[in-house]
Length: 175
Image 1 (tube, rainbow, N blue to C red):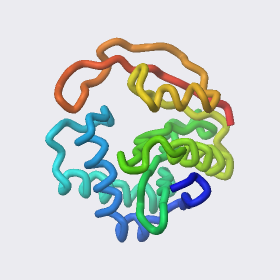
Image 2: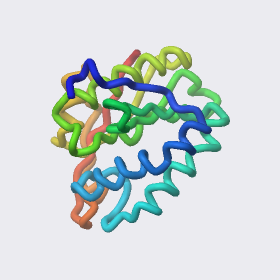
Image 3: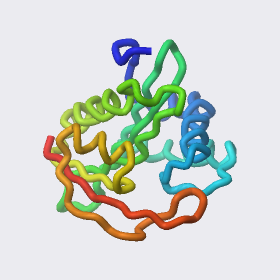
Image 4: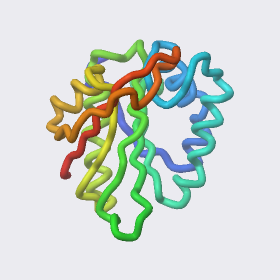
Protein backbone atom coordinates (compact mmCIF):
# COMPACT_ATOMS: atom_id res chain seq x y z
CA UNK A 1 0.00 0.00 0.00
CA UNK A 2 1.25 3.46 -0.84
CA UNK A 3 -0.25 6.69 0.40
CA UNK A 4 -1.45 7.37 -3.16
CA UNK A 5 -3.70 4.31 -2.93
CA UNK A 6 -5.37 5.50 0.28
CA UNK A 7 -8.72 7.22 -0.17
CA UNK A 8 -10.13 9.35 2.65
CA UNK A 9 -13.86 10.00 2.84
CA UNK A 10 -16.07 11.98 5.19
CA UNK A 11 -18.71 9.49 6.34
CA UNK A 12 -22.34 10.44 6.69
CA UNK A 13 -24.41 9.06 9.56
CA UNK A 14 -25.84 6.38 7.26
CA UNK A 15 -22.39 5.44 5.95
CA UNK A 16 -21.13 5.22 9.53
CA UNK A 17 -23.96 2.86 10.45
CA UNK A 18 -23.10 0.70 7.44
CA UNK A 19 -19.37 0.71 8.29
CA UNK A 20 -19.68 0.25 12.05
CA UNK A 21 -18.16 -3.25 11.98
CA UNK A 22 -15.13 -2.07 10.00
CA UNK A 23 -14.70 1.02 12.17
CA UNK A 24 -14.98 -1.14 15.27
CA UNK A 25 -12.30 -3.50 13.94
CA UNK A 26 -9.83 -0.60 13.63
CA UNK A 27 -10.56 0.55 17.19
CA UNK A 28 -10.36 -3.02 18.51
CA UNK A 29 -7.00 -3.54 16.78
CA UNK A 30 -5.56 -0.30 18.18
CA UNK A 31 -6.56 -1.08 21.76
CA UNK A 32 -5.46 -4.70 21.37
CA UNK A 33 -2.10 -3.34 20.19
CA UNK A 34 -1.74 -1.21 23.33
CA UNK A 35 -2.85 2.23 22.11
CA UNK A 36 -4.14 4.59 24.78
CA UNK A 37 -7.27 5.89 23.03
CA UNK A 38 -9.74 6.09 25.94
CA UNK A 39 -10.53 2.37 26.14
CA UNK A 40 -9.28 -0.33 28.49
CA UNK A 41 -8.28 -3.88 27.66
CA UNK A 42 -9.84 -6.19 27.00
CA UNK A 43 -12.05 -4.20 24.64
CA UNK A 44 -14.75 -6.27 22.99
CA UNK A 45 -15.83 -5.79 19.41
CA UNK A 46 -19.36 -5.11 20.71
CA UNK A 47 -18.02 -2.24 22.84
CA UNK A 48 -16.13 -0.88 19.83
CA UNK A 49 -19.26 -1.13 17.65
CA UNK A 50 -21.31 0.64 20.34
CA UNK A 51 -18.78 3.48 20.42
CA UNK A 52 -19.10 4.18 16.69
CA UNK A 53 -22.87 3.64 16.65
CA UNK A 54 -23.06 6.23 19.44
CA UNK A 55 -21.53 8.86 17.15
CA UNK A 56 -24.42 8.76 14.68
CA UNK A 57 -26.56 11.45 16.39
CA UNK A 58 -23.61 13.88 16.39
CA UNK A 59 -22.89 13.13 12.73
CA UNK A 60 -26.55 13.76 11.90
CA UNK A 61 -26.50 17.02 13.87
CA UNK A 62 -23.31 18.18 12.18
CA UNK A 63 -21.43 18.54 15.46
CA UNK A 64 -18.92 15.80 14.61
CA UNK A 65 -17.02 14.81 11.48
CA UNK A 66 -15.86 11.24 10.94
CA UNK A 67 -13.25 10.51 8.29
CA UNK A 68 -12.31 7.03 7.15
CA UNK A 69 -9.25 5.94 5.19
CA UNK A 70 -9.65 3.09 2.72
CA UNK A 71 -6.97 1.04 1.01
CA UNK A 72 -8.24 -1.10 -1.84
CA UNK A 73 -11.74 -0.92 -0.37
CA UNK A 74 -10.67 -1.93 3.15
CA UNK A 75 -11.11 0.55 6.00
CA UNK A 76 -7.64 1.00 7.54
CA UNK A 77 -7.94 4.20 9.59
CA UNK A 78 -10.19 6.87 10.97
CA UNK A 79 -10.14 10.24 12.73
CA UNK A 80 -12.78 12.59 14.11
CA UNK A 81 -13.36 16.30 14.42
CA UNK A 82 -15.61 17.29 17.32
CA UNK A 83 -16.95 20.82 17.02
CA UNK A 84 -16.64 22.87 20.22
CA UNK A 85 -20.02 23.35 21.86
CA UNK A 86 -19.59 26.66 23.75
CA UNK A 87 -21.20 29.58 21.90
CA UNK A 88 -17.99 31.61 22.23
CA UNK A 89 -15.90 28.97 20.39
CA UNK A 90 -17.53 28.44 16.97
CA UNK A 91 -14.09 28.68 15.35
CA UNK A 92 -12.60 25.73 17.26
CA UNK A 93 -12.77 21.93 17.14
CA UNK A 94 -11.14 18.99 18.89
CA UNK A 95 -9.35 16.25 16.99
CA UNK A 96 -10.13 12.84 18.44
CA UNK A 97 -9.44 9.18 17.86
CA UNK A 98 -6.80 9.09 15.15
CA UNK A 99 -6.76 5.32 14.66
CA UNK A 100 -4.76 3.33 12.12
CA UNK A 101 -4.97 -0.45 11.94
CA UNK A 102 -1.61 -2.08 12.69
CA UNK A 103 -1.48 -3.66 9.22
CA UNK A 104 -1.46 -0.16 7.67
CA UNK A 105 0.91 1.68 10.03
CA UNK A 106 4.12 3.29 8.90
CA UNK A 107 2.75 4.02 5.44
CA UNK A 108 1.46 7.56 5.85
CA UNK A 109 -2.19 6.77 6.58
CA UNK A 110 -2.19 8.91 9.74
CA UNK A 111 -0.67 11.84 7.85
CA UNK A 112 -3.21 11.56 5.04
CA UNK A 113 -6.06 11.41 7.56
CA UNK A 114 -4.79 14.46 9.44
CA UNK A 115 -4.29 16.49 6.27
CA UNK A 116 -7.82 15.62 5.15
CA UNK A 117 -9.13 16.51 8.60
CA UNK A 118 -7.54 19.95 8.42
CA UNK A 119 -9.19 20.47 5.03
CA UNK A 120 -12.58 19.41 6.47
CA UNK A 121 -12.07 21.76 9.43
CA UNK A 122 -11.53 24.70 7.08
CA UNK A 123 -14.64 23.74 5.07
CA UNK A 124 -16.57 23.72 8.36
CA UNK A 125 -15.27 27.22 9.21
CA UNK A 126 -12.81 26.14 11.90
CA UNK A 127 -9.56 28.04 12.35
CA UNK A 128 -8.18 26.41 15.50
CA UNK A 129 -7.80 22.71 16.25
CA UNK A 130 -6.83 21.13 19.57
CA UNK A 131 -5.83 17.58 20.47
CA UNK A 132 -4.06 15.53 23.09
CA UNK A 133 -1.98 12.39 22.74
CA UNK A 134 0.34 10.14 24.70
CA UNK A 135 3.66 11.91 25.15
CA UNK A 136 6.36 10.44 22.94
CA UNK A 137 3.99 8.12 21.06
CA UNK A 138 4.04 7.63 17.28
CA UNK A 139 1.02 9.97 17.10
CA UNK A 140 2.94 12.58 19.13
CA UNK A 141 5.80 12.41 16.61
CA UNK A 142 3.32 12.67 13.71
CA UNK A 143 1.74 15.83 15.13
CA UNK A 144 5.15 17.43 15.58
CA UNK A 145 6.06 16.59 11.94
CA UNK A 146 2.73 18.07 10.78
CA UNK A 147 3.47 21.42 12.45
CA UNK A 148 1.28 21.20 15.54
CA UNK A 149 2.32 23.40 18.46
CA UNK A 150 2.92 21.69 21.79
CA UNK A 151 1.17 23.42 24.69
CA UNK A 152 2.48 21.19 27.45
CA UNK A 153 2.52 17.82 29.11
CA UNK A 154 0.19 16.55 31.81
CA UNK A 155 1.73 13.71 33.83
CA UNK A 156 -0.39 10.65 34.68
CA UNK A 157 -3.31 12.02 32.64
CA UNK A 158 -4.59 8.75 31.22
CA UNK A 159 -4.13 5.01 31.35
CA UNK A 160 -2.68 2.57 28.88
CA UNK A 161 -5.15 -0.22 28.09
CA UNK A 162 -3.34 -2.42 30.63
CA UNK A 163 -3.87 0.11 33.45
CA UNK A 164 -0.47 1.79 33.63
CA UNK A 165 -0.46 5.61 33.84
CA UNK A 166 0.78 7.65 30.91
CA UNK A 167 1.55 11.30 30.31
CA UNK A 168 -0.41 13.29 27.75
CA UNK A 169 0.70 16.23 25.63
CA UNK A 170 -1.75 18.89 24.46
CA UNK A 171 -1.29 20.41 20.99
CA UNK A 172 -2.98 23.07 18.88
CA UNK A 173 -2.83 24.13 15.26
CA UNK A 174 -4.22 27.10 13.37
CA UNK A 175 -5.71 26.02 10.06
